[in-house]
Length: 403
Image (cartoon, rainbow, N blue to C red; front, top):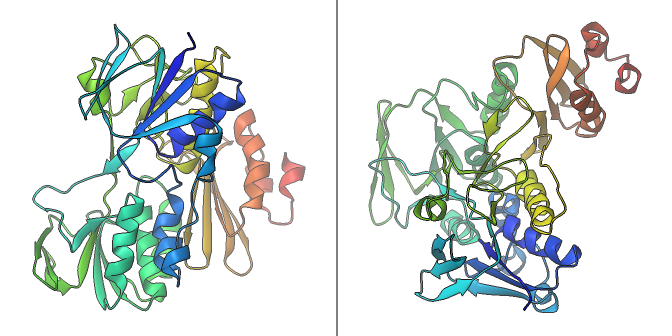
């Protein structure tokens, strides 16, 4: 009898894993279980293309595969969810009550929008995590004049940029004292704030505890800054890993599902990948979850190879991008407090490269409308060798010369 591989989750990671299994010549049964009615898709277009497209019928083009892929590749897609795994008997208990026997299992359940205590979701208090969320927001934007965003992270700012492009007033309430304190250096956070304010976005920092009251045709946002009325409110304060299945199944969980470098969980023949997986980024043992397009893609492919017996350690170089207005912002490596020197290579027409070093070793780079330079810096970060910081700061010296 041929083996059965169960993929729990039908998002980008689940879809890429199924594709990689077939490309790896797996001939057995693949069953993908997901509670969304849609086939796997990518999430970056949700905060941009879906909200800005003029035509409802063509507003989304982020499908991972053509609809025919799953039939052509013999990938079964069940619209259900897995409540628990019996990891000893290799049986998945589905929410519908049925059971499914597997030989190997990949948990790729992603994450969900983080809630704010005391704020209930409603028709006018919404998050932006799924395609259905984006389509709902697209409808809410029609006729709206002023919207609130709680959270000044990447997602909240992307939504703000899209709303402003539609001529809608936006107020962003941020609990912290600046934008994106954990993700980007302060110098660029100030530049990003100036960009949003120049486009008419109002940003309120140190907003404190916020409550939202919903009325039939409006929402009331209340915090230490006062009380304001808006057409609707977007909650964008990060996400939580969907690791309940692992917890219920006795699989190790710690801010996500704990996996080793080969994407293996603490249960035999059970793997995890994507936003829900907590892994060791490098040899020094630093563990984290990466919530990004890159991680959902690459870790799922690595997990599939490992499930097929091709040992593939997962050691990614973190890469993230965001599009806001006419800015493309890309980041490579990790921004943290260990960076002891910043080097700025400024270009013309709103182009710049901000590089973070630790003891003259490049560990992080942020490119504004200059993503091509990151390809050169990737090699520098991977080699982890000291560089001449003064030459790095000189815009007349090409990066290739420094490498």
